[in-house]
Image (tube, rainbow, N blue to C red; front, side, top):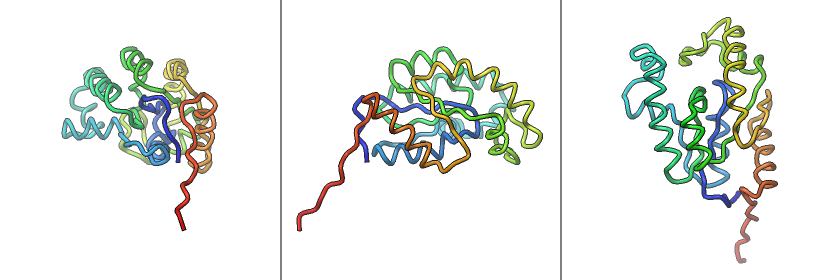
Length: 187
């Protein structure tokens, strides 16, 4: 277990398929914080899936709504927040995150993202098959903005616990979290 020393949200950013949701749940448990997935919040508020919102209203309108929801979440109580792949591309969202969050870019190679998104149909910007060209284009577009995150952690094809352990080492080194020793029960 760990204690969050800085009263801010831990914001996970990065491409679809890098592990923001699975890693976010582990991080939240270790910090005893709520886990929030911004895409699930958007779906709960609108009653539509992300893919349906893209199809109905287009990406530009979706992003306007996403900015508002991200601002509300970032200004709320500290949590571990998994953002949609495009959320951190918004200048407004990055600005709010700078003030209210510790942003963590989960960076993965194109081949890792491709493998993890193959056959998945719920990602509106990445085709479920033959997606390497699309991912390569998105990487070139998104990585310069993701690089503005406070922390970068490489997401490899490994156990999510290894990735989380690397992140917690960085968080401890930067005095953002501290390890809580297990309590001993009286005999």
